[in-house]
Image 1 (tube, rainbow, N blue to C red):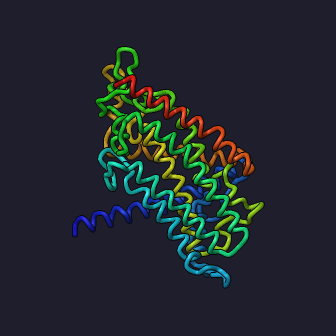
Image 2 (cartoon, rainbow, N blue to C red):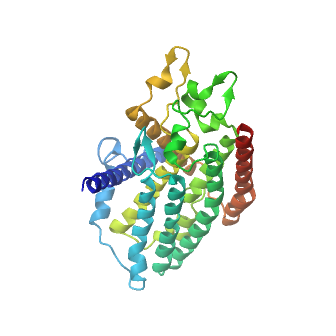
Image 3 (tube, rainbow, N blue to C red):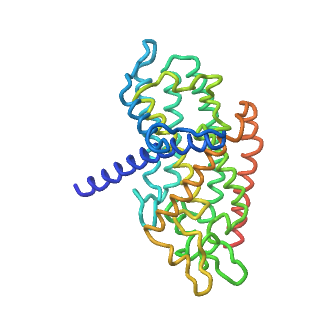
Length: 356
């Protein structure tokens, strides 16, 4: 009984966090968009428009959920549930801080990619079940895009995972801090895992992982249908893409899944490449900055700061780069990102052989 109550509490806490993050991220995106376009953004509801997003979600909850007569009812109703649950389940084995993890899986990396792939099924259900040409076009674009970009993104992550030789996300996180006992790279006569800080992160222990991280970040934008890869939701072409027929609470769940996905893919990149919950501050002589800024509370703060920084870059890119054509999108994936990611995997393999 205690086990069930504990995991129920964890599940509810993660859901509450994703809902709160979505509210804050939507407000931040609207304000940042206003700043980048030399306007104010939300200003009316609450001081500085802080309550605007809460007003919007209340409006969505009060709206009537309309089911068009020609839809495939079961596919149409089930799609938002599949889309949200597939993203929500991905948080189960993510390490939030030192020893803070929902479910400790020795194949956590594989699990996250497996459940995230279910989102594609939900999107296809929404497009096909809506019986709308714009929804179907958006769904087909999304399926092709997500499946294509999963491949270079996965290979880029594998290049980082190979340095640890484990699929356990918690072990990958520990490997990049002062708790690690297996350095990948020696900086002069110093073991960088004893110096700690950002010098122990994977992108600094193995410099080719900087390229792998860039490939993964580009792939994650496509996974989230974010600009410049927002072809599935291209408002100027497809009205709203695969969710054009949705309203009320089910539209809110699709929206919640999109922003939760932004956080999840950013968090996964932080865990594999950017030190996870480990501090960026190094130990310098008698000044043990890394030791002083390590712990449960510090770890949670660091991983939130790094993840939110990547989410900020995702928002920044949206209001900076134009949307790609579909042929450009596929060419970038198969002719550029895939060969580069495979090259990073090759380098990681050679690196590990040389260390063994």
